Length: 74
Image 1 (tube, rainbow, N blue to C red):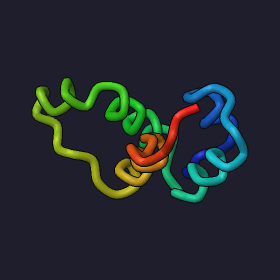
Image 2 (cartoon, one colour):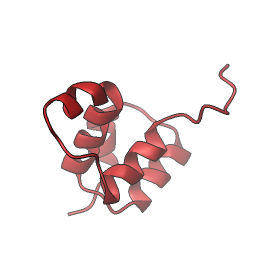
Image 3 (cartoon, rainbow, N blue to C red):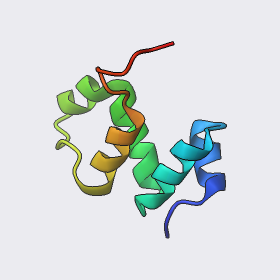
C-alpha cells in the first residue's frame, strides 16, 4: 500500500507541502521510505554490509530527500 501523509509525518516529522506531494507521487511504501532514509543517513555503512545500491522507488525517494549540490543553502 502506498504512502499516506501520516506515514511521511511519522517517519520524517513535519514536512512542507511540496515535499509531501513529491513523496506521495512516488507510489512508494512506508518501508521503502524508511529504507531511503537509512541510505540518505548512512550509505557507507549499508554498502559495507554488502547491500545493493537502491533502485526503483527507493532510489527516487533518495533523489527527493537529498539536496542538490547546486542548491544554495540558507
